[in-house]
Image 1 (tube, rainbow, N blue to C red):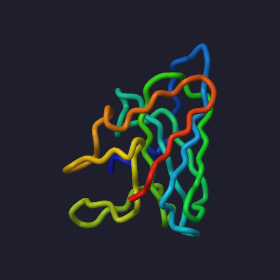
Image 2: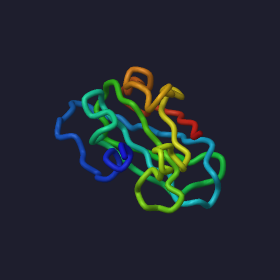
Image 3: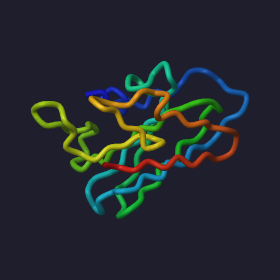
Image 4: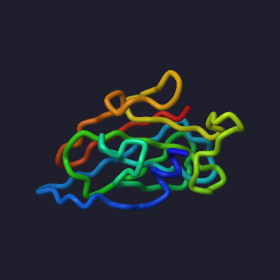
Length: 136
C-alpha cells in the first residue's frame, strides 16, 4: 500500500532550491519486457508516504534507468519496483508480501517491513547523482 501512496501521484515538492540536481536511478534485476519500472525519491519527512518526485520507464532487461531532474540537493531515499501489470501499485499477496520485485537505494532492507529512511538515504549534490537500486 505504501508504494501506491508513494507513486500514486506525481506531486512535486513546493520548496524552491537555489540549485537543482539530477538523480539517475539505475535499477538492476529487472525482468525484460514486463511492464515498467517505477521510482520515487523521498525526503525524510515524506518517506513511504507522499514522495515529492517520481518517474518511470519501460522495463529493460537487466537494467532500467529512470532520470529525475530538478531535485534539490540534500538527503533523499530512492524506492523502486517493477510494475509488471502497469497498475501503478506494488501488488501484494493475501498477507501483504510484495508479489512484484522492489528495492531501495543503498540496498536497504527491513527485517519485518520496509527499511528506515536513514538506511536508504543518499546524498544528492549539484550535477548528477547516480543511485543504484537492486530489485529483489
